[in-house]
Image 1 (cartoon, rainbow, N blue to C red):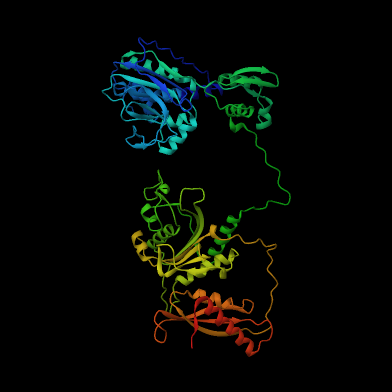
Image 2 (image 1 turned 180 degrees about the horizontal axis):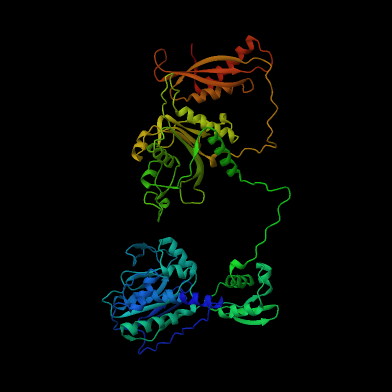
Length: 625
């Protein structure tokens, strides 16, 4: 509050703090509203008083000007007084229309099924751990957070009941987070309000209301007791220089602490300090050191450089940082431009890339079209590629390494590398090369995997598992039947159309978190090159299999027949039509055999028989005649 700022300025030597003591208001009769505490652990003390016959008109001009100066729009005398005292004394208050109260005012814990229509016009569910203020009609306020609409004061209010209570900071913070309410009361109570300021705040509010709005005041009624005063703190003045390097005279420290309203018992090397009731955050000597350093000025703290490490500075990266760095180098070397886009995107666009999770909606977005945490990087890359095309860039190759969000939990963030290409068909009199397609995207993806030490043969290619990929033109890369590590291919034209992006667009998205951690190599030196003495042997084989069998399965089972001898298997033809039964396809591949020693024709034929048997057993494929 303003009073606290003035106290700090005085302690820092800017002047003398003027204590504005609050006069006690003497009521003419007992408070007619009964106050009861059913949850003293949530609300230990509750003070209240009733003012009868108030004229709730505009507040005085000086008060309105001060409220406007700090960005608060004046409303009425009762509301302005509570706001003014909250700012001036850091003491939140609440005013109820006494005529709308039914029965005693009770501070208790919430019950299942209860709701509150709050002053902001919204209805909130009440939790069983929340502190609530109730009367016979039900919940009329969330303790320390916000009051209810049913008992709110208005221009017609004549009788007002003032609340000045103290609420548990942790419980108030949990209530605020659960409801999403951001109020001045919550801001102050969750950080700690002086528990001994209830009567002072109440008396000051009564004096201002009666002076400018009239009325007859009841005697203040107090339920419960304020928490005990903070314990003494043992402070060692030598700690100031030991912990901060500042040299401060004991006399200066004594003056600062007295200006901060600490009670000092000097015992030589140690001082025993009794903090004021509004400084219950003081627990040990280091806390007092912080106060001294703050008042002297953090700009006065001496600086000293750490000694340089022997052998020079070595960069230390986490395994994930190393993966990201390697992936970025590969993509840049393959002609891609790196982008750094927002971690947000439009909610309507995000729905095209996965199911919407309301927890990922941004409450206060930096722009209206960036109101959702992105579930994929591809949407942002597509927008960026379109903007580049709009500025005349005909062929765009972009990539980004960054996070995506599948939920709001600590384990729901993923680190991905994504790439997107908007191909452009060059015109040339000799004929232009083929533009970028799904297989090029696959090649770029496997280049990244190779740089990360992930052997390509360990992965299986399957149908895409996400709706934004074009069926038949895209695929997923799996590590076993359950773990999907990447997608690649062409983005769905319908998705691009809904985003206002011109296609086609090809690319991939690799989930770095899904990749297994490879064993660290003892050295970065490449292994000794082993030159093959014998000429490789190449054989073409064609198999007829069901259309549902991926060609990659045939390659995997063919190579699995003898991994030492068979060095490479490349599919060069897939045929469906005349000569092949309906519902089946012919897959032809070239197999490279690298002999380790001389092989005879019968040895080669035996190897071919093993390949045929392995493919037949794993896929049901039959050698095409």
